[in-house]
Image (cartoon, rainbow, N blue to C red; front, side, top):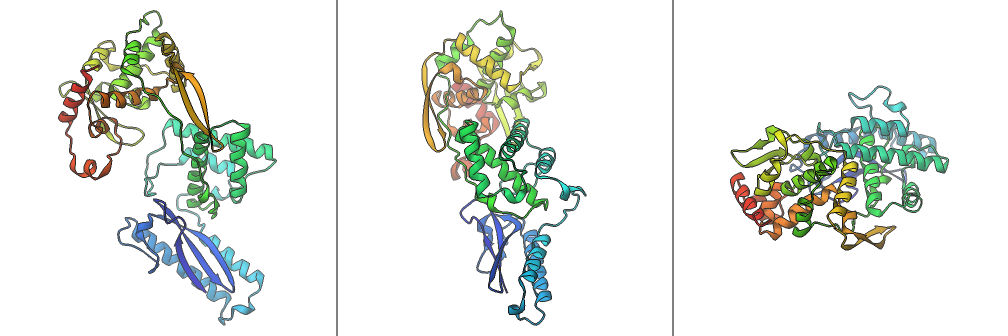
Length: 425
């Protein structure tokens, strides 16, 4: 018998470590439950490199797996003669290994193993916590938008399986499922590829979570591909932003509130969710900044109190914001865009079933909360601010060695540079 561990996706940023067991003229391939960065795996020596932060845990698991498999093999071949093994004994040996690699996790619900696929998905939505890019578990729950996506994917899986006359189980999440589900989302539901990509990513996150919980030991889903290409998006021009700013909406308080929230986003570069969580404690008038932590990336951000932002905040007592739900807010923004005369034609492309399509819209039809964030970045560049300064405000990751290790921008510098830039509005 020969045991070999190997990376499933050596060219990816992270990869599952699989085990190949060769014996009696057969090969058994199974996931080990270990996920690491390829650079931390030494294939020739079959060991986890010392550079891996989780080396001790990963190496101990591999050693435990090797010991168990060797012991199980010795039990079925006490004489060392594999030629006498029956198919039944070989299957029992394989099942014993698979059972060992799908243990009952400490702290896991005692009835976890009895959950159906759909019930497990519900448990995933209720309990899943965010993982780091290295696959480490955190205590942070996904945001409201992400949980809504998870629920939508669960609903779509139930609808698809119902139409197929199937009851989904973990073993069915394979290539045949992928082709059928993808086609159904594209052809019958009419979803574009970037939306389907979110479904596929969610399924992969769920399958990884459920495997770690010992609910299955499959790996076909790891090869599911998704098209992450998105169509063009818009940012407002300076003239368009001023038209929205100068609209008289005094006869419509809801639209006025939505317009002010949009301007707040545009002047600060914040995500809508972060803006709605702001309170007086985040404002430091003496330092001339707003300090907050991004809910999506857990990044500390600083938004300078620029001249247009200060003028806007005078209309909002005690910095108390009344935020409509995102969907409602986007409806308001489109009405505001119409009133501001944003009727210039815009050709927008998208991908469906791998094919590029184009549609023509008036620009007001494309107004959403995220346009404000893009507008902040675009106008800041136009007004002379650098990407390094802007990323300090928006919380985007630093680009390249220079920004990561050599450009150190303190709060005061960021404030002065952004405030100077936005004087040009």
